[in-house]
Length: 246
Length: 246
DNA sequence: CCTTCCGTTAGGCTC
DNA sequence: GAGCCTAGCGGAAGG
Image 1 (cartoon, chains in turn purple, orange, red, blue):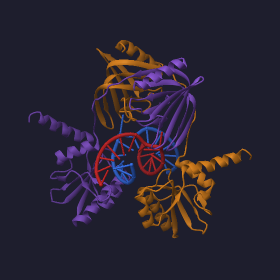
Image 2 (tube, each protein chain N blue to C red):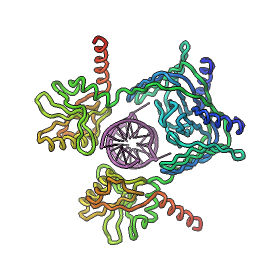
Image 3 (tube, rainbow over the protein chains, first blue to last red):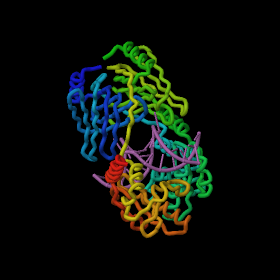
Image 4 (cartoon, protein in one colour):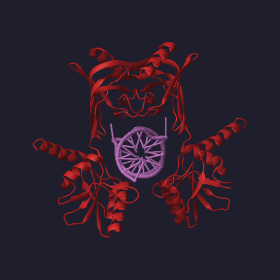
């Protein structure tokens, strides 16, 4: 438990120094902007980052109950025995007000973090793997371009030629393929077929197929190849191993 | 700056007491599960909630760089001059490891928060408003069912009859309607038309129309009505005002 | 359990 | 800047 004037001082200092800070306290919350919300009295954690993004977290749940994206304007006002924290931005016009009646603790630190974040086992990595090791799709497959625009919207993941010389479109998914994916790749295939006047094979390469997608694939002549992010990663690791000796 | 053994003690106590706690510190991070990621050395905030959801935040950006949903298993291990925080869950199998080399601060509090959160100006509220005040769509409009399944996927927001007795489908959007929305409502209209063998009007009620959606609406005979969440809210407020006297 | 859709989606990319 | 797509999307509702 902190005296409100001490908390106010700590928060003002953290804002001035552009530190990342958290406030544990009892509050009510109002938000108005693209939508609008109210939150009655309760104890939460407020987090403010160095880029002035704001998060208000309840003591449960993955998601913040209220927030403000980076770059908002912050204002702190003491009014009697309350401390009001205001985060606003202009476009779109949004306003988040946290009204503290009691503050349990404040922690503030200037954080240094220039490190690179790298995500693996993404669709992007699967694509890299297939381009370097086309046999992951099937023996004799040869990719032609990394990506090919398929009409107004959407891109083809991998476009190439199979062992028999057929044009082949490959759609990669890191998770089980569903009906939407089937429609998508079928649409691409149709478009390219019209453009080039040749038959085009459509292949979905994914770890599995959702139950409801299987009949649709059959109906539209779309083919399925089992390919997991894990297998792609293993092939890429092999590649890196070879790089060491090159 | 905190001695690691003190930090360890504080964290263990917070975990044991099921408090909500934050850790400011220098760390590296690894995640493996549905996807996989690594994050090199830098200073961040770790947040652990009472339901054992875990968030790791960098000092910038709205989103956590890594996380774990509620209910994961937490383990803390001291190894030499490092403190390793581990959050794992079984299904799907996911593992998040935060390896602290330095801890700047720990804050922990048991938070009490049973308050109700209420969100306004949602699509749901617009629907309520239209059902109670159909003139928001147009004079003489009469809704028939709140929702109607439109084939295998998708629901019609409001289905009714206009002043001339025409079947009318209304699609509500709380934000500017785009081309996807036009395709969606047009698909619903076609389906119902086929089913009932009668012409069906398709209407999108939204605050505005994206530039690229306008020609598409004209082409497919979909109509536009300007309707804002704000206006809906005003009508609902009027309703509540009347309720006071009933 | 699976499937579907909404979100103050956020974030990234292209035009 | 507007439009478009993806996500470890999360969350809710329905079957």
